[in-house]
Image (cartoon, rainbow, N blue to C red):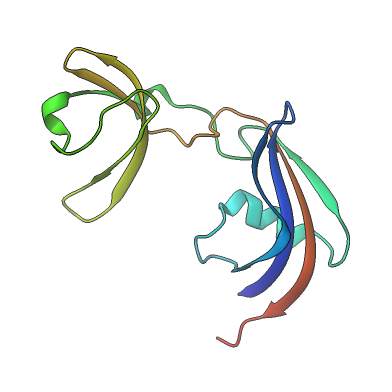
Length: 139
């Protein structure tokens, strides 16, 4: 797997900044889970020492929003210590140890609507990247 040192900026198609590492280089290895695979693919296509911009449709980036990923849950299903507020992030662990993150979209009495879609699902994005260094890992 390749290791990279990059500068990058991720924005919504409307120009709103989502994430960036423009001053301090970001280092990662392909497949280590730090970046979404769609962004890793762009980096693998990019040239070293050249600022490049990739315009990704929602389906190319983080996928379309999926209505089945929006769940209405009873307040009793949440840990007592959790502060249940609109737009708060929540994380649930499955019996197998997997975890799922979501965002509280609606609160109606004891019914809490949690959206488990990726926050950028359904969004077109722009990914600007400059590769400062690329090396092959020793594994």
